[in-house]
Amino acid sequence: FRVLHRSRHAIDMGPPSAAAPWPEYTHDDADADAAGVGDLRSAAFGGGAAGLHGHGRDWRGCSNAAGAATALCRGSRRGSFCGFRCRPLCTAARRGAPAAARRRGVGALGVGVGGDQGASPEAAGRTPSSSSRSPAPMAAAAATISPTLSPAMWECAIGVGARVDSIASGKEDVEATAAVLVRRAARAKTVLVLGLDEVDKVLTEIAQHASGDGGSLDVAFGLLLFMRGLLLQQFDRQGEAMLSMVKAGQSMARSMNRSGRAHKGWGAAADLGELGELAYRCLATSLALAADVERALDVAEDGVRLCGTAGLMRLSGELGNLVGNRFGVEPELEAARRAAFGCAASHLRAAEEMEPGHKRSYIAWAFASDMLHDIEGCRHIADLAITHCRAFWSHRLQRPNHFVTGVTSRPWWDPKLFPWVRQLEENWAHIRAELDALDGGAVLDGDGCSSAWPEVRGHDKDLAGSTGTWREFPLLGLGEEDEDRARRVCPVTRRLLSSVEAVRAHRELRPKEETALFSRLTPGTRLRPHCGPSNTHLTCHLGLRIPPGGGCRIRVGDESREWKDGRCLVFDDSWEHEVWHDGNDVRVVLLIRFWHPDIRLEHRESILRDEARDRMCKSWTLL
Image 1: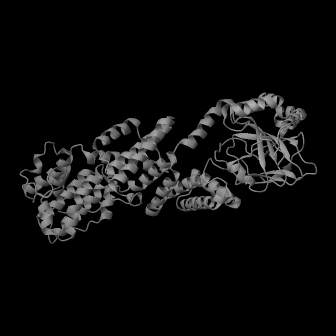
Image 2 (image 1 turned 120 degrees about the horizontal axis):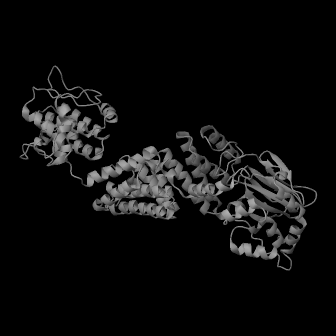
Image 3 (image 1 turned 60 degrees about the vertical axis):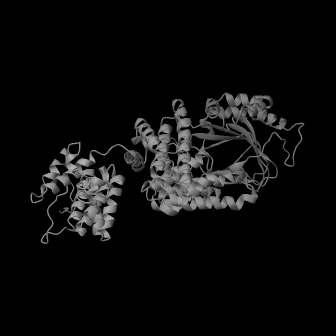
């Protein structure tokens, strides 16, 4: 027999001879054929040729044909199953074991797939051509077989192809089907290429075969369950999606524990094949959703060491940021915190070098650099994002997590563009009087504040560091308890704010965020450079208690300005900004957030839904 090099349509078989020996057919040739054909029948025909050569004691021909069939199987729907059946024959031939190869007999692959392995069809008391299904799909290929072959050998070769159609639906078929669905989503980098019904059907079939022993079928079940969760997120069924993805992680972790394998060797297991890398990603994400962030990071970093892909590096960076956030800003945890963010930045930098152009990667990388107080690093990351991404950041000094394109983008805005600003300035004395009354009769602390002024926490506290104290008094947003208190002590201020549609709508659509507050800084406070979370709103500062003699200023973009009592500054806080308080007394401003004027009423809710989806959806797991 002879396999024609780089054949894209069929395997042409002819009798071997000294004048026309079997040509060398490498795995590279077979891979090329698989990419062009991916036909299981071609692979089966190659396997049949291997068996015939084994029967004829042509061990080199047997080895070449079996290797070709194995490689061709990689491109087929049942590739892993049939390829597995080919390997023993190929290995036996390459080791020079004539007896082992001869026992496989004529049509060894057909026997291995459809019946008794290790015996020829004749020894099994049947012929391949007696298959219950018609070998019609093989008719064209059969016509190419040399008429010099004996009828028995011809029938055997045809039977190999016929047996492929008679494979019963079993564990291997279900696993292969699941693998096809997962690979389809992985290669398209989106689950939208899948249908929820077909995923549910395969999950039901897998549940009937999964053994829970840590095998590839159990992992395939977990992977497909995770894909189902990603699909549900696309339909805004967030609760179901979260449950599905967490269960996926539990299934994969449980199968590893039962098999006695630690996750360090799991992704490299031969039975996972190319799905091992994706399994690492999905398991790590599932663990993070279940709030087991430290273990999720361990899994992702093990995957980086074993697979070294850009996707796993990006995921490790995201998880490193989550771990760093958990350490808070306490001085005793500073070393561990910086180590976590440093590791995250390192992974994200390596991912950028391998595969540039991922928006989420730039956002996470800039966040890690910001937590490391590397402002120049943040600007460099923005330059890379501008170079490699479309419809994303447009200036190195504007780096919000959520960026909406098509709106006017400038750091400073003229207050005269907003008529309600003049009303605030005209009533600033009333607002100042309510501010002065806040601490009247209350017990004050060392900064001259009562307990009504909580100190900022988390990231905001890190911005000030140890330079001074930053406190806030909420007026709108953040919860009913705070608003009830503000309603009692600051009625004029609240009434003025609620009369502004852009401010009122911001509070109504973002009830858990700060819409308006009094912001208080002690002398010596310095807020380091940072960017706000979104460019969908603008910020107004009304000066209420500004120390005389200057020294209190704010830089937004490239320009710095000073506050003045009774005057407003309007700016876009998604631009890089920083604050200096070099005065000799406290500085207090009324801070107001309101919708960007370019964002119309009918678009606001959809933008908020997009922001929420960005925070919750884990579709980036496939990127």
